[in-house]
Amino acid sequence: MAKRNESILKLLTQVPWWISVVLSATAFFVLKFIVPAINFQSWVLKGVAGAAPTIAYFVAIIFLVHAPISYFNSSRKRKLLDKQKDIDSIKSLSWKQFEELIAEAYRRKGYSVVENYDIGPDGGIDLVLKKDGNMFLVQCKQWRSYKVDVRVVREMYGVMTAKHAAGVIIVTSGLFTQEAKNFAVDKPIYLVEGSQVVNLIRSVQTKLTYSPDEINKPRTTANLCPVCGGELVMRVAQHGKNAGNKFWGCSNFPKCKFSKAYTG
Image (cartoon, rainbow, N blue to C red; front, side, top):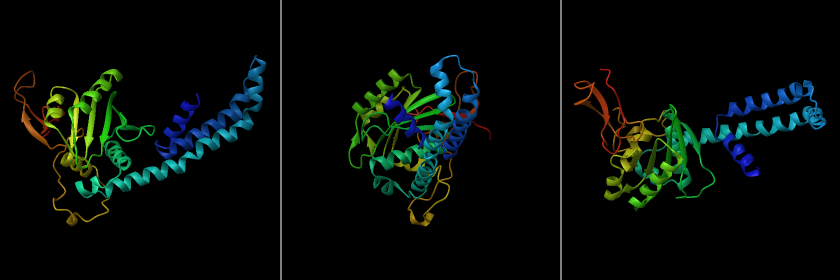
């Protein structure tokens, strides 16, 4: 129970700051006014109701104290993402900063993101993404010189199956071995490496803290895949009821199977 309560309090530092404020106000109102007005039959519950107005202040403070922490964390992560210039700046990050960077990128892509603060580097699931009823598991590998091998991909595929997730995303600042890439083919496994990480970050940057002239490669304005960061290219469906219709497909197909309708 203590561990669960601790996890809830950690979660409050990740959600938007105003959620803590709303929870604080709601808890105070319920404990201060609603609970004491209920006519409980049990003497135990009557005792709890009598103490509720006093408890209300403490519970409200517990929720409220996380609001500034959440605001600070959100601001720090936004600045962290917007100041990344290239793969070199990304590789200079610590493993924890790298995880926070990827979390913020997918958050800006419209995903609900839960960060795992209980596991150290290379400990398994680092992020849980949710969007449109689908859950994706993310592992971040801040490996500057080594390639991520197939063993890591196999392990995450097993975790994905056990957790009944829609897919798994493995992000590395380095590269994947060819064997790892081959294993991911025809599976809901999305491998995001090196330049794709840069594309992912640039696609969601809003307030740049550096001049575009500082980087060798100009910031791209092309359509980018929201899953792996690869460039979207126009294709024509060859089979099925949509045969002959144009659509946007990920350039990393078949590793990444993301597509969206062409509206041109």
